[in-house]
Length: 196
Image (tube, rainbow, N blue to C red; front, side, top):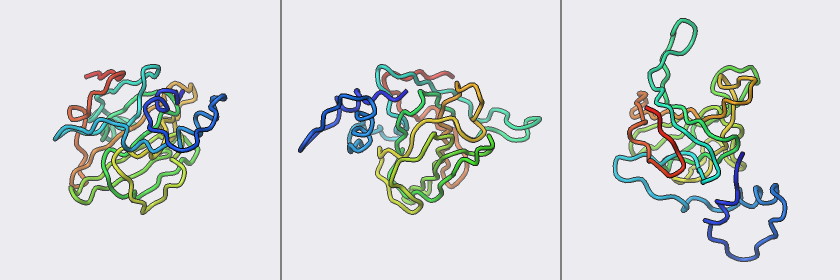
């Protein structure tokens, strides 16, 4: 579950502030806040961690790049899986353009809800799959800033197991559109566990 309280405590507020007496109101307010400046910039060679995680949240990264997928190991896993609480915000790892919007078909197949984000300055594309939903107001062709919220952790597409326990982000890092393992380059933020 998304814990908006840690975001509200970090975010600079200006102007009129509404009363946040109900959790749903707090979530709606947190979604409208500008969170793009609320992260430690990645060091050179590092990748911004794509999920906003607080002390009350659960999140771990599995180094599943290259693992067998499909019937009879018909394909390899071209990303890493970041297991996290349902609804945690997913942010753009880089500034770039959203070039493709994936929409869940409801058939437990494919990417589910997601985005392809392209950084033309480095010829690198990023894929974000299995989101619960896209962030409001974004569409194909939009430019997003590094750190901007683009969606929320979910369990859609091939991730969509009926148990409700498989909430995660499938993240692909594709320099020159060739899948590469981002695991060692991901920022190591507090409150996140990395499993080799």
